[in-house]
Image (cartoon, rainbow, N blue to C red):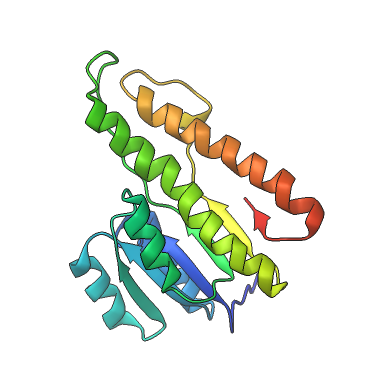
Amino acid sequence: MDIRFDGKRALVTGAGKGIGRALTLKLVECGAEVVAVSRTQSDLDELAEISPKIIPLCVDIGDWSTTEAAIATAGPIDLVVNNAGVMDVKEYGTYTEEEVDRTMNINVKAVVNITQALVKGMCERGTGGAVVNVSSMMGIYAIPCYGVYCASKGAVDQLTRSMAVEFGPKQKPRTW
């Protein structure tokens, strides 16, 4: 199968490592220009050396207002991949407020913040677009010592369904 993204701009969160890095490189290989979002500048520097089609954007997406301002500089986006995530492996009853906030800020609130900022532009341009929210089977299945992570991914699953119901009938951005 030959999927091409020539002339399209994507934004990938968590682009510095793992799945996000692989997605960034694959999208570039398929012709897209990619705004690579990571909180680690050195990871972004490495990516930028690979291709001029990779535009680094260093921001901690757990910070709502800083992320909102940074995303506003990204320009028009056709595809957003909400991939970034964090996970604490802890027995239930030992989480701190800071750990819960960090997980929910990055895994859930950042998806809302980034998507609503980018979908607005997709709708205004009338060209459609796509939203891909990376989740986990842990959003469906409970696993000991992953309670807050499981809850965050369950929230992402439900956000994705809600976005699909809202945007699908209007032929606006597709959501997976």
